[in-house]
Image (cartoon, one colour):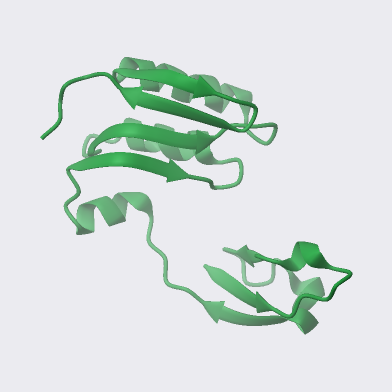
Length: 130
């Protein structure tokens, strides 16, 4: 992951927080940026490395790919028990992916307890706690 520490001109406040998995994503703004490579691992590796068995609250925001990330976790045979999950679901979300992940949540024993124009929160109603 490439994180950019930026000098933010007053007329370009949208530069705040620029970052990308692609090194030249923001190449038009190189004059404002100092690049730092930040080590990253995927969530499955994180769970395996630290032998995570249970997650109380999982929240993520991966810019429109939340449904795909959650679906890949829910269908992974080594997925830890997740009590509550919150993820972004908005206009950027692919609706087919969203319906697929909602079905997977219900199949895995989750109940959607809150759904807004921005987020979905689901709680696991099974009793598989450690």
